[in-house]
Image (tube, rainbow over all chains, first blue to last red; front, side):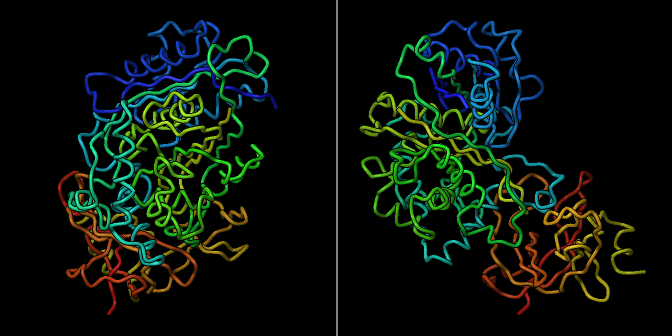
Length: 382
Length: 138
Protein backbone atom coordinates (compact mmCIF):
# COMPACT_ATOMS: atom_id res chain seq x y z
CA UNK A 1 0.00 0.00 0.00
CA UNK A 2 1.33 3.45 -0.92
CA UNK A 3 1.63 6.38 1.47
CA UNK A 4 -1.00 9.06 0.89
CA UNK A 5 -0.70 12.75 1.76
CA UNK A 6 -3.06 15.71 1.86
CA UNK A 7 -1.57 18.59 -0.12
CA UNK A 8 -4.32 21.13 0.35
CA UNK A 9 -7.78 21.78 1.78
CA UNK A 10 -10.42 24.41 1.16
CA UNK A 11 -13.88 25.23 2.46
CA UNK A 12 -16.66 27.75 2.14
CA UNK A 13 -18.26 29.25 5.22
CA UNK A 14 -21.12 27.27 6.82
CA UNK A 15 -24.55 28.88 6.91
CA UNK A 16 -27.74 29.26 4.92
CA UNK A 17 -27.01 30.26 1.34
CA UNK A 18 -30.19 29.45 -0.61
CA UNK A 19 -28.98 31.68 -3.46
CA UNK A 20 -25.94 29.43 -3.99
CA UNK A 21 -26.46 26.02 -5.56
CA UNK A 22 -24.28 23.11 -4.50
CA UNK A 23 -22.10 23.67 -7.57
CA UNK A 24 -21.50 27.30 -6.64
CA UNK A 25 -20.48 26.36 -3.11
CA UNK A 26 -18.53 23.40 -4.47
CA UNK A 27 -16.46 25.33 -7.00
CA UNK A 28 -15.39 27.75 -4.30
CA UNK A 29 -14.18 24.96 -1.97
CA UNK A 30 -12.56 22.88 -4.71
CA UNK A 31 -10.72 25.91 -6.09
CA UNK A 32 -9.60 26.90 -2.58
CA UNK A 33 -8.24 23.38 -1.99
CA UNK A 34 -6.32 23.41 -5.28
CA UNK A 35 -4.89 26.88 -4.51
CA UNK A 36 -3.99 25.71 -1.00
CA UNK A 37 -2.23 22.69 -2.48
CA UNK A 38 -0.42 24.97 -4.89
CA UNK A 39 -0.70 22.57 -7.82
CA UNK A 40 -1.97 23.05 -11.34
CA UNK A 41 -5.59 21.84 -11.52
CA UNK A 42 -4.70 19.53 -14.42
CA UNK A 43 -2.58 17.43 -12.08
CA UNK A 44 -5.85 16.07 -10.63
CA UNK A 45 -6.50 12.69 -12.22
CA UNK A 46 -9.75 11.71 -10.51
CA UNK A 47 -12.41 13.37 -8.36
CA UNK A 48 -14.92 12.07 -5.83
CA UNK A 49 -17.88 14.19 -4.80
CA UNK A 50 -19.83 13.39 -1.63
CA UNK A 51 -23.40 14.68 -1.32
CA UNK A 52 -26.83 13.48 -0.21
CA UNK A 53 -29.57 15.63 -1.74
CA UNK A 54 -27.87 17.44 -4.65
CA UNK A 55 -29.14 15.44 -7.60
CA UNK A 56 -27.68 13.84 -10.67
CA UNK A 57 -24.09 14.56 -11.64
CA UNK A 58 -23.43 17.16 -8.98
CA UNK A 59 -19.67 16.50 -9.04
CA UNK A 60 -19.47 17.08 -12.79
CA UNK A 61 -21.80 20.11 -12.51
CA UNK A 62 -19.47 21.58 -9.90
CA UNK A 63 -16.09 20.77 -11.41
CA UNK A 64 -16.92 22.07 -14.88
CA UNK A 65 -17.07 25.49 -13.22
CA UNK A 66 -13.30 25.28 -12.67
CA UNK A 67 -12.30 23.46 -15.84
CA UNK A 68 -11.91 20.06 -14.22
CA UNK A 69 -13.58 18.08 -16.99
CA UNK A 70 -12.75 14.83 -18.68
CA UNK A 71 -11.26 13.00 -15.72
CA UNK A 72 -13.32 10.34 -13.93
CA UNK A 73 -15.62 12.05 -11.44
CA UNK A 74 -17.49 9.75 -9.06
CA UNK A 75 -20.45 10.96 -7.04
CA UNK A 76 -20.53 9.33 -3.63
CA UNK A 77 -23.46 8.95 -1.25
CA UNK A 78 -23.18 7.57 2.28
CA UNK A 79 -25.75 9.67 4.15
CA UNK A 80 -24.09 12.09 6.59
CA UNK A 81 -20.81 10.25 6.01
CA UNK A 82 -20.75 11.11 2.27
CA UNK A 83 -17.92 13.63 2.51
CA UNK A 84 -15.55 11.31 4.35
CA UNK A 85 -16.63 8.43 2.12
CA UNK A 86 -15.47 10.56 -0.85
CA UNK A 87 -12.21 11.16 1.06
CA UNK A 88 -11.85 7.41 1.66
CA UNK A 89 -12.39 6.75 -2.06
CA UNK A 90 -9.69 9.30 -2.94
CA UNK A 91 -7.35 7.81 -0.35
CA UNK A 92 -7.80 4.23 -1.53
CA UNK A 93 -7.46 4.97 -5.23
CA UNK A 94 -4.01 6.39 -4.43
CA UNK A 95 -3.10 3.90 -1.69
CA UNK A 96 -3.77 0.99 -4.02
CA UNK A 97 -1.88 2.55 -6.90
CA UNK A 98 -4.57 3.41 -9.44
CA UNK A 99 -3.98 7.19 -9.49
CA UNK A 100 -1.48 9.56 -7.91
CA UNK A 101 -3.45 12.77 -7.44
CA UNK A 102 -7.13 12.91 -6.43
CA UNK A 103 -9.65 15.51 -5.34
CA UNK A 104 -12.17 14.72 -2.60
CA UNK A 105 -15.08 17.14 -2.50
CA UNK A 106 -18.23 17.39 -0.38
CA UNK A 107 -21.15 19.64 -1.31
CA UNK A 108 -24.57 20.28 0.14
CA UNK A 109 -27.22 22.94 -0.05
CA UNK A 110 -29.86 21.94 2.49
CA UNK A 111 -31.55 25.30 2.96
CA UNK A 112 -33.03 25.08 -0.55
CA UNK A 113 -34.96 21.95 0.39
CA UNK A 114 -35.57 22.50 4.09
CA UNK A 115 -36.28 25.61 6.15
CA UNK A 116 -35.90 23.74 9.43
CA UNK A 117 -37.07 20.61 11.20
CA UNK A 118 -35.73 17.10 10.83
CA UNK A 119 -33.67 15.99 7.83
CA UNK A 120 -35.84 14.20 5.24
CA UNK A 121 -35.25 10.45 5.45
CA UNK A 122 -36.16 7.51 3.25
CA UNK A 123 -39.79 6.46 3.75
CA UNK A 124 -39.05 2.92 2.55
CA UNK A 125 -37.49 2.46 5.99
CA UNK A 126 -40.31 1.27 8.21
CA UNK A 127 -39.15 3.23 11.22
CA UNK A 128 -39.05 6.44 9.20
CA UNK A 129 -42.62 5.88 7.99
CA UNK A 130 -43.49 5.24 11.65
CA UNK A 131 -42.33 8.78 12.44
CA UNK A 132 -38.67 8.41 13.34
CA UNK A 133 -36.42 11.36 12.50
CA UNK A 134 -32.76 11.70 13.38
CA UNK A 135 -33.59 13.85 16.46
CA UNK A 136 -36.05 11.28 17.80
CA UNK A 137 -33.59 8.40 17.27
CA UNK A 138 -30.87 10.26 19.19
CA UNK A 139 -33.43 11.34 21.79
CA UNK A 140 -34.12 7.68 22.55
CA UNK A 141 -30.40 7.03 22.82
CA UNK A 142 -30.09 9.99 25.20
CA UNK A 143 -33.04 8.87 27.32
CA UNK A 144 -31.59 5.42 27.91
CA UNK A 145 -28.05 6.69 28.35
CA UNK A 146 -29.11 9.21 30.99
CA UNK A 147 -30.91 6.48 32.92
CA UNK A 148 -28.08 3.93 32.65
CA UNK A 149 -25.26 6.28 33.62
CA UNK A 150 -26.99 8.92 35.73
CA UNK A 151 -26.30 11.68 33.22
CA UNK A 152 -28.26 14.92 33.63
CA UNK A 153 -29.86 17.30 31.14
CA UNK A 154 -27.32 19.91 32.29
CA UNK A 155 -24.43 17.64 31.35
CA UNK A 156 -25.90 17.12 27.88
CA UNK A 157 -26.31 20.88 27.53
CA UNK A 158 -22.63 21.40 28.44
CA UNK A 159 -21.68 19.69 25.17
CA UNK A 160 -23.42 22.53 23.33
CA UNK A 161 -21.91 25.21 25.57
CA UNK A 162 -18.43 23.85 24.78
CA UNK A 163 -19.28 23.56 21.08
CA UNK A 164 -20.44 27.19 20.82
CA UNK A 165 -17.40 28.38 22.76
CA UNK A 166 -15.13 26.69 20.22
CA UNK A 167 -17.20 27.90 17.26
CA UNK A 168 -16.95 31.48 18.49
CA UNK A 169 -13.28 31.23 17.48
CA UNK A 170 -14.00 29.69 14.08
CA UNK A 171 -14.62 32.19 11.26
CA UNK A 172 -16.47 29.63 9.09
CA UNK A 173 -18.86 28.39 11.83
CA UNK A 174 -22.63 28.77 11.42
CA UNK A 175 -23.25 29.62 15.12
CA UNK A 176 -20.55 31.86 16.60
CA UNK A 177 -22.37 33.17 19.67
CA UNK A 178 -21.57 31.61 23.03
CA UNK A 179 -24.43 30.17 25.07
CA UNK A 180 -25.21 28.89 28.57
CA UNK A 181 -26.62 25.68 30.03
CA UNK A 182 -29.87 27.53 30.77
CA UNK A 183 -30.02 28.91 27.24
CA UNK A 184 -29.59 25.44 25.72
CA UNK A 185 -32.23 23.88 27.97
CA UNK A 186 -34.69 26.73 27.40
CA UNK A 187 -34.63 26.36 23.61
CA UNK A 188 -37.74 24.57 22.27
CA UNK A 189 -38.06 20.84 22.95
CA UNK A 190 -37.67 18.83 19.72
CA UNK A 191 -37.83 15.27 21.08
CA UNK A 192 -37.43 14.77 24.84
CA UNK A 193 -34.77 15.20 26.21
CA UNK A 194 -33.21 16.98 23.21
CA UNK A 195 -33.89 20.69 22.87
CA UNK A 196 -33.34 22.57 19.61
CA UNK A 197 -29.88 23.79 20.57
CA UNK A 198 -28.80 20.17 21.13
CA UNK A 199 -29.57 19.37 17.47
CA UNK A 200 -27.32 20.35 14.57
CA UNK A 201 -28.73 23.10 12.33
CA UNK A 202 -29.86 23.06 8.70
CA UNK A 203 -27.07 24.58 6.66
CA UNK A 204 -25.08 24.72 3.45
CA UNK A 205 -21.38 24.49 2.66
CA UNK A 206 -18.70 22.74 0.68
CA UNK A 207 -15.23 21.51 1.53
CA UNK A 208 -12.49 19.75 -0.42
CA UNK A 209 -9.08 18.15 -0.12
CA UNK A 210 -6.33 17.39 -2.65
CA UNK A 211 -4.51 14.11 -2.01
CA UNK A 212 -1.41 12.66 -3.58
CA UNK A 213 0.83 9.61 -3.38
CA UNK A 214 4.00 9.48 -1.30
CA UNK A 215 5.98 9.18 -4.53
CA UNK A 216 4.88 12.63 -5.70
CA UNK A 217 4.62 14.46 -2.40
CA UNK A 218 8.10 15.96 -2.42
CA UNK A 219 7.64 17.17 -5.99
CA UNK A 220 4.14 18.61 -5.52
CA UNK A 221 3.91 19.85 -1.93
CA UNK A 222 4.07 23.60 -1.43
CA UNK A 223 2.91 23.49 2.22
CA UNK A 224 3.58 21.03 5.05
CA UNK A 225 2.04 17.79 3.71
CA UNK A 226 -0.27 15.92 6.09
CA UNK A 227 0.03 12.14 6.06
CA UNK A 228 -3.03 9.90 6.08
CA UNK A 229 -2.02 7.40 8.77
CA UNK A 230 -5.25 5.43 8.71
CA UNK A 231 -8.51 5.54 6.75
CA UNK A 232 -11.33 3.03 7.14
CA UNK A 233 -14.96 2.94 5.98
CA UNK A 234 -17.46 0.41 7.28
CA UNK A 235 -21.19 -0.14 7.09
CA UNK A 236 -23.35 -0.80 10.12
CA UNK A 237 -23.99 -4.38 11.16
CA UNK A 238 -27.33 -5.87 12.02
CA UNK A 239 -27.46 -4.94 15.69
CA UNK A 240 -30.87 -5.88 16.99
CA UNK A 241 -31.16 -6.86 19.76
CA UNK A 242 -27.81 -5.55 20.96
CA UNK A 243 -27.86 -2.35 22.92
CA UNK A 244 -28.39 0.09 20.09
CA UNK A 245 -29.10 3.03 22.30
CA UNK A 246 -26.66 3.46 25.13
CA UNK A 247 -23.60 1.38 24.46
CA UNK A 248 -20.75 2.96 22.52
CA UNK A 249 -21.60 2.52 18.87
CA UNK A 250 -20.34 -0.86 17.60
CA UNK A 251 -19.86 0.65 14.17
CA UNK A 252 -17.71 3.53 15.45
CA UNK A 253 -15.75 1.18 17.76
CA UNK A 254 -15.09 -1.28 14.95
CA UNK A 255 -14.17 1.33 12.33
CA UNK A 256 -11.94 3.34 14.66
CA UNK A 257 -10.31 0.13 15.94
CA UNK A 258 -9.32 -0.73 12.37
CA UNK A 259 -8.08 2.82 11.74
CA UNK A 260 -5.96 2.81 14.94
CA UNK A 261 -4.49 -0.52 13.88
CA UNK A 262 -3.66 0.78 10.41
CA UNK A 263 -1.98 3.83 11.94
CA UNK A 264 -0.21 1.80 14.63
CA UNK A 265 -1.58 4.26 17.19
CA UNK A 266 -4.19 4.28 19.94
CA UNK A 267 -6.72 6.76 21.32
CA UNK A 268 -4.13 8.02 23.82
CA UNK A 269 -2.00 9.27 20.89
CA UNK A 270 -4.69 11.59 19.51
CA UNK A 271 -4.17 15.33 20.13
CA UNK A 272 -7.32 16.60 18.44
CA UNK A 273 -10.53 15.06 17.15
CA UNK A 274 -13.34 16.12 14.84
CA UNK A 275 -16.28 13.85 15.53
CA UNK A 276 -19.91 13.47 14.48
CA UNK A 277 -21.79 15.39 17.20
CA UNK A 278 -25.03 15.69 15.26
CA UNK A 279 -26.76 15.83 18.66
CA UNK A 280 -25.40 16.56 22.16
CA UNK A 281 -25.66 12.90 23.20
CA UNK A 282 -23.69 11.79 20.12
CA UNK A 283 -20.49 13.43 21.35
CA UNK A 284 -20.57 11.41 24.58
CA UNK A 285 -21.31 8.12 22.86
CA UNK A 286 -18.70 8.66 20.15
CA UNK A 287 -15.96 9.70 22.62
CA UNK A 288 -16.52 6.35 24.33
CA UNK A 289 -16.50 4.42 21.06
CA UNK A 290 -13.24 6.12 20.02
CA UNK A 291 -11.68 5.04 23.32
CA UNK A 292 -11.23 8.55 24.79
CA UNK A 293 -12.91 7.36 27.98
CA UNK A 294 -14.60 4.35 29.55
CA UNK A 295 -18.12 3.33 28.67
CA UNK A 296 -20.55 5.64 30.46
CA UNK A 297 -17.87 8.26 31.18
CA UNK A 298 -18.69 10.59 28.26
CA UNK A 299 -20.29 13.15 30.56
CA UNK A 300 -17.25 13.18 32.84
CA UNK A 301 -15.03 14.10 29.88
CA UNK A 302 -17.18 17.18 29.39
CA UNK A 303 -17.36 17.99 33.13
CA UNK A 304 -13.59 17.80 33.48
CA UNK A 305 -13.14 19.91 30.32
CA UNK A 306 -10.73 17.36 28.90
CA UNK A 307 -12.32 17.77 25.46
CA UNK A 308 -12.38 21.60 25.59
CA UNK A 309 -9.63 23.75 24.08
CA UNK A 310 -6.72 23.40 26.50
CA UNK A 311 -7.74 19.85 27.46
CA UNK A 312 -5.74 16.70 26.74
CA UNK A 313 -7.98 15.45 23.92
CA UNK A 314 -9.66 18.41 22.28
CA UNK A 315 -12.90 17.35 20.61
CA UNK A 316 -14.45 19.47 17.89
CA UNK A 317 -12.38 22.64 18.12
CA UNK A 318 -14.29 23.79 15.02
CA UNK A 319 -17.56 23.77 16.97
CA UNK A 320 -18.48 20.44 15.40
CA UNK A 321 -21.75 19.66 13.68
CA UNK A 322 -23.68 21.40 16.47
CA UNK A 323 -22.12 24.83 15.87
CA UNK A 324 -19.81 24.87 12.84
CA UNK A 325 -22.72 23.19 11.07
CA UNK A 326 -23.76 19.97 9.37
CA UNK A 327 -24.24 20.45 5.63
CA UNK A 328 -24.47 16.67 5.40
CA UNK A 329 -22.42 15.76 2.31
CA UNK A 330 -19.81 18.44 3.06
CA UNK A 331 -19.38 17.64 6.77
CA UNK A 332 -16.67 14.97 6.49
CA UNK A 333 -14.40 17.23 4.46
CA UNK A 334 -15.08 20.21 6.75
CA UNK A 335 -13.87 17.97 9.60
CA UNK A 336 -10.84 16.90 7.55
CA UNK A 337 -9.92 20.50 6.71
CA UNK A 338 -10.14 21.43 10.40
CA UNK A 339 -7.71 18.68 11.41
CA UNK A 340 -5.32 19.63 8.58
CA UNK A 341 -5.31 23.25 9.82
CA UNK A 342 -4.49 22.12 13.36
CA UNK A 343 -1.67 19.85 12.22
CA UNK A 344 -0.19 22.66 10.13
CA UNK A 345 -0.60 25.19 12.95
CA UNK A 346 -3.03 27.26 10.87
CA UNK A 347 -6.12 27.04 13.10
CA UNK A 348 -5.88 30.59 14.44
CA UNK A 349 -7.37 31.35 17.85
CA UNK A 350 -8.66 27.81 18.30
CA UNK A 351 -5.30 26.16 17.52
CA UNK A 352 -4.56 23.02 19.55
CA UNK A 353 -0.97 23.80 20.42
CA UNK A 354 1.57 21.30 19.15
CA UNK A 355 -1.02 18.96 17.60
CA UNK A 356 0.78 16.13 15.80
CA UNK A 357 -1.99 13.57 15.29
CA UNK A 358 -5.71 14.08 14.71
CA UNK A 359 -8.69 11.83 14.16
CA UNK A 360 -11.85 12.34 12.12
CA UNK A 361 -15.03 10.33 12.71
CA UNK A 362 -18.16 10.63 10.60
CA UNK A 363 -21.32 8.59 11.04
CA UNK A 364 -23.92 8.50 8.34
CA UNK A 365 -27.54 7.59 8.47
CA UNK A 366 -30.20 5.90 10.47
CA UNK A 367 -30.95 2.26 9.87
CA UNK A 368 -32.64 1.27 13.11
CA UNK A 369 -31.83 -2.42 12.92
CA UNK A 370 -28.31 -1.46 11.88
CA UNK A 371 -25.85 0.72 13.71
CA UNK A 372 -25.72 3.50 11.12
CA UNK A 373 -25.30 3.35 7.36
CA UNK A 374 -21.66 4.37 7.02
CA UNK A 375 -18.91 5.12 9.48
CA UNK A 376 -15.62 6.55 8.24
CA UNK A 377 -12.61 7.17 10.48
CA UNK A 378 -9.39 8.83 9.31
CA UNK A 379 -6.23 9.47 11.30
CA UNK A 380 -3.93 12.23 10.06
CA UNK A 381 -0.46 13.13 11.23
CA UNK A 382 2.62 15.23 10.60
CA UNK B 1 -63.86 -10.91 8.99
CA UNK B 2 -61.11 -9.82 11.36
CA UNK B 3 -60.97 -6.33 12.84
CA UNK B 4 -58.01 -5.54 10.66
CA UNK B 5 -59.80 -6.49 7.45
CA UNK B 6 -62.85 -4.44 8.45
CA UNK B 7 -60.71 -1.39 9.07
CA UNK B 8 -58.95 -1.82 5.75
CA UNK B 9 -62.24 -1.30 3.89
CA UNK B 10 -62.13 2.40 4.69
CA UNK B 11 -58.63 3.12 5.88
CA UNK B 12 -55.11 2.76 4.62
CA UNK B 13 -53.20 0.25 6.70
CA UNK B 14 -49.40 0.42 6.70
CA UNK B 15 -47.59 -2.95 6.66
CA UNK B 16 -50.60 -5.17 7.46
CA UNK B 17 -48.31 -8.19 7.05
CA UNK B 18 -46.34 -7.19 10.13
CA UNK B 19 -49.11 -7.50 12.70
CA UNK B 20 -52.33 -9.28 13.55
CA UNK B 21 -55.12 -8.50 15.98
CA UNK B 22 -56.33 -12.08 16.36
CA UNK B 23 -56.56 -13.76 18.76
CA UNK B 24 -54.87 -10.79 20.48
CA UNK B 25 -52.74 -7.97 19.04
CA UNK B 26 -49.17 -9.05 18.23
CA UNK B 27 -46.37 -8.38 15.74
CA UNK B 28 -45.21 -10.81 13.06
CA UNK B 29 -41.45 -11.22 12.76
CA UNK B 30 -39.31 -13.28 10.42
CA UNK B 31 -37.62 -16.43 11.69
CA UNK B 32 -34.77 -18.31 10.06
CA UNK B 33 -35.58 -21.99 9.64
CA UNK B 34 -31.88 -22.74 9.68
CA UNK B 35 -30.43 -20.87 12.70
CA UNK B 36 -33.85 -20.20 14.32
CA UNK B 37 -33.07 -16.52 14.97
CA UNK B 38 -35.73 -13.83 14.66
CA UNK B 39 -35.62 -10.53 12.79
CA UNK B 40 -38.18 -7.75 12.57
CA UNK B 41 -39.27 -7.43 9.88
CA UNK B 42 -38.53 -10.56 7.91
CA UNK B 43 -35.60 -10.03 5.54
CA UNK B 44 -34.83 -11.72 2.23
CA UNK B 45 -31.91 -13.66 3.65
CA UNK B 46 -30.99 -14.26 7.28
CA UNK B 47 -28.48 -11.62 8.50
CA UNK B 48 -26.95 -14.18 10.88
CA UNK B 49 -26.45 -17.28 8.67
CA UNK B 50 -27.42 -16.21 5.11
CA UNK B 51 -30.10 -18.89 4.82
CA UNK B 52 -32.97 -17.79 2.57
CA UNK B 53 -35.38 -20.23 4.18
CA UNK B 54 -37.34 -17.80 6.35
CA UNK B 55 -40.82 -17.96 7.80
CA UNK B 56 -43.31 -15.59 9.39
CA UNK B 57 -43.40 -16.04 13.12
CA UNK B 58 -45.52 -14.25 15.74
CA UNK B 59 -43.76 -12.31 18.50
CA UNK B 60 -44.90 -12.39 22.12
CA UNK B 61 -47.77 -9.95 22.65
CA UNK B 62 -45.80 -7.98 25.23
CA UNK B 63 -42.31 -6.57 25.48
CA UNK B 64 -40.21 -4.19 27.59
CA UNK B 65 -39.79 -0.47 26.81
CA UNK B 66 -36.06 0.00 26.18
CA UNK B 67 -36.34 3.71 25.48
CA UNK B 68 -38.78 6.32 24.24
CA UNK B 69 -39.20 9.96 23.38
CA UNK B 70 -42.06 12.38 22.93
CA UNK B 71 -41.61 13.86 19.46
CA UNK B 72 -42.56 17.56 19.38
CA UNK B 73 -41.26 18.51 15.94
CA UNK B 74 -41.56 16.10 13.04
CA UNK B 75 -42.20 15.72 9.34
CA UNK B 76 -45.30 17.48 7.93
CA UNK B 77 -47.54 14.37 7.78
CA UNK B 78 -47.14 13.60 11.50
CA UNK B 79 -49.36 15.46 13.98
CA UNK B 80 -47.27 16.27 17.07
CA UNK B 81 -46.73 15.45 19.84
CA UNK B 82 -46.50 11.69 19.67
CA UNK B 83 -44.64 9.01 21.55
CA UNK B 84 -42.00 6.87 19.84
CA UNK B 85 -40.47 3.87 21.54
CA UNK B 86 -38.11 0.93 21.24
CA UNK B 87 -39.49 -2.29 22.69
CA UNK B 88 -37.51 -5.46 23.37
CA UNK B 89 -39.35 -8.71 22.78
CA UNK B 90 -38.40 -12.02 24.41
CA UNK B 91 -37.57 -13.45 20.98
CA UNK B 92 -34.54 -11.15 20.88
CA UNK B 93 -35.72 -8.39 18.59
CA UNK B 94 -36.03 -4.69 19.28
CA UNK B 95 -38.83 -2.92 17.44
CA UNK B 96 -39.49 0.79 16.98
CA UNK B 97 -43.04 2.09 16.77
CA UNK B 98 -45.21 4.92 17.98
CA UNK B 99 -46.71 4.76 21.45
CA UNK B 100 -50.44 5.28 21.94
CA UNK B 101 -51.08 6.96 25.27
CA UNK B 102 -53.07 9.84 26.77
CA UNK B 103 -50.62 10.09 29.64
CA UNK B 104 -47.07 10.31 28.28
CA UNK B 105 -45.88 11.41 31.74
CA UNK B 106 -46.62 7.90 32.96
CA UNK B 107 -44.25 6.24 30.50
CA UNK B 108 -41.22 4.70 32.23
CA UNK B 109 -38.19 2.86 30.93
CA UNK B 110 -38.42 -0.93 31.28
CA UNK B 111 -42.23 -0.89 31.65
CA UNK B 112 -44.30 -3.58 30.00
CA UNK B 113 -45.79 -2.70 26.62
CA UNK B 114 -48.47 -4.30 24.50
CA UNK B 115 -49.49 -3.89 20.87
CA UNK B 116 -52.42 -1.91 19.54
CA UNK B 117 -53.52 -0.50 16.19
CA UNK B 118 -53.94 3.23 15.64
CA UNK B 119 -53.18 6.25 13.47
CA UNK B 120 -49.49 6.82 12.76
CA UNK B 121 -49.59 9.68 10.23
CA UNK B 122 -51.70 11.41 7.60
CA UNK B 123 -51.85 10.11 4.06
CA UNK B 124 -51.79 12.23 0.90
CA UNK B 125 -55.59 12.61 1.14
CA UNK B 126 -55.25 13.92 4.70
CA UNK B 127 -56.80 10.78 6.17
CA UNK B 128 -55.18 8.80 8.94
CA UNK B 129 -52.94 5.87 8.03
CA UNK B 130 -53.16 3.11 10.63
CA UNK B 131 -50.57 0.60 11.76
CA UNK B 132 -49.24 -1.21 14.79
CA UNK B 133 -48.33 0.86 17.83
CA UNK B 134 -47.21 0.16 21.35
CA UNK B 135 -49.35 0.84 24.38
CA UNK B 136 -48.26 0.88 28.00
CA UNK B 137 -49.61 -1.95 30.17
CA UNK B 138 -50.10 -0.97 33.77
